[in-house]
Length: 198
Image 1 (cartoon, helix red, strand yellow):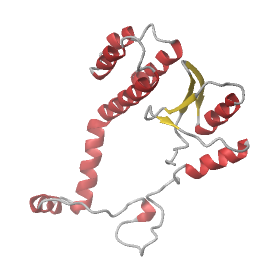
Image 2: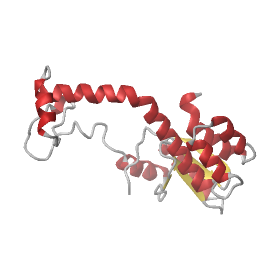
Image 3: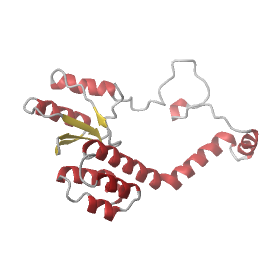
Image 4: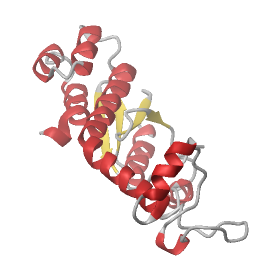
């Protein structure tokens, strides 16, 4: 089973109705209780990616939560001590040595920079993250909205046109095209696509 980030949010749908939204534990327990009285399928979505995800709901609440906790990645995967002998880098600071393949002219330029290649690479990466941060977040939000939308609303009217408007970043047209969709679906798609740009 895939790693489940416990700090993320999840949303469960029963048909076209939102059942629960919140942490992995909250949603898993709500779905577990609902499956006892519902005979409809329930789909759980990872709000960060918009993709459906399965939780193992066997056993009592404590067992369900314990399994979810085991599937969560450790707080600092990269800072963990490696199983092999300590190599280069500063693991206590979160610095990890990895291989980078560059052409000789790139290495020459990096080595000529103040602080050397490592410092120059870190500065370049930080600068690129700052420069493209908003675009990266917008792309991730759009992709999450599309994944959710295609799973739960792929057969709704004007799905194709709405998808094109979403990828064209035409918010007015997009919200107009999905205005008649079921309220919970429509609201969740808009939240995934545009909540960081409200």
